[in-house]
Image (cartoon, helix red, strand yellow):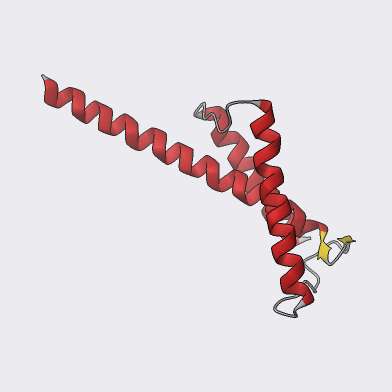
Length: 110
């Protein structure tokens, strides 16, 4: 259950930042669906192969117990939520740093 709670915190923080700072992550609905789907497919293939090879496993009381294929539900959510959070943070930093740079450039023009 802890894994799910941590993922929820990441998701809610990304949503709040996206709306609070008017961050536009995607240019269209098609991108909003396609990009996370790419992360999901690539991550599922990677994780499933690693689990199958015995490189890691998902066991313990931190999971809710629902498995799809070789992976727990939380891992699929991880593959959707964490890239969304990372892109949100990247866009926020990019927006803030570009704003400061533009402000600095405008100051130097005077």
